[in-house]
Every structure is written in structure tokens, then in C-alpha cells.
Length: 237
Image (cartoon, rainbow, N blue to C red; front, side):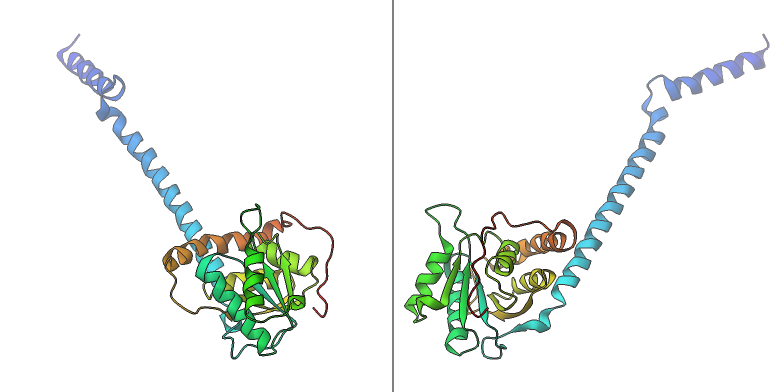
């Protein structure tokens, strides 16, 4: 074997050893390429998801021209007052009562969560409205309003409400309006903001994903509420 052939074979064997004998320098290039492709795909998915969220927020929040203060709100047969806890729900009830006393609505539909005996949002809302002077005959309670979608679906299908004012805080109103209109209802919003709430930043952040879920409910899945039941139409609704 010539000197040239011995040198050539030794050189080839060295390159093969680097590429296939476990030397990380031989495997680094394909591994880096695979990781780069994965990172690009992940970034593409994240960009798509972010774009979808932004588009959904725009679709939902463009209805802000339908949000009013209690003094400039239009008239409707019913005010739908959404349940919650603490100062937030008390402000909603007081705003609903203001609409009732000013003659802008004839009935108050108190809708909220009552999934256990020890927790009853509509009853507390009703008690506050009674304390503020609303006759019991003009207050209707929906004890299965577990979320905004359920409340509005039941308002339409159980209580026969097709035209209403939606009473809640401004951060929640665009979603409520979007759902109501998606269900074919004629609705306008009335702000019940009477103070700065302690957890407002949390509510604002949570509303982003709640809005995405509402968009999916209205446009994709069209679910029924957790409970329906027999119709109980509100007189004059």
C-alpha cells in the first residue's frame, strides 16, 4: 500500500469516528437544526394564538357605543342584573334600582349563582333591592345564572326576555353585550361602576380569557346552560 493510500484511509477513518462514534461534534449540527425547527413552529403557533386573541377582543369590544351611564340609558322592559359578590354586586343592584325608580325599566331580573345552599347570589340581590324600595312583584330571580352565557340564555329561553338593559361593571359589559346579541337579543349596557374595586387588575386580566370563551360559545360550540327547565315568562318582558 502506498504512502498516499495509507494517509487517505486514516483521514477517512478519523472523519467517520467524529461523525458516528458518539463525538458530540458529529451530532451537533442535526440536533441544532431540529431544535431550531421546533422553536420556529412554536413561535408560529404562539403568534397565531396571540393574533386570534387580539382579533376576538376587537370583535367583542367594538360594541362599546352601546354602553351607557344610568342617567343616559335608554328604556327597556327589563334590567338584567348579573350576580357577583361584595361591593361589585351591591353596585350592580343599586344601579338596577336606579333604573327602575327612574322608570327606564319595569322589572329587575336578578341572575346569579346558587349552586349550594350556603351561597345564594340572587337572594342577596333581591333582599337589597327590596330594602331600597322595589316591590317584590317587580323582582324576578334566576338561581341558575352560573356564568354570563347561562344567564342570558336563560333570560331569553326561560324568562322570555328579548329586549333588556344589561347592568354590570364596564369591564364586563362588552362580553355580556356580545353574548346577548349573539343569542339574538336586543340589549344595551348600563355601567354600574361606582368605585375602584380592590381586585380590578385581576378582573381585567381574567376577562381576556373569558372573552375568548364567550366568542367560542357564541360562534362555535353553542352550548346549552347547565340547567334550563320550564318557561316562566316575565310579564311585560
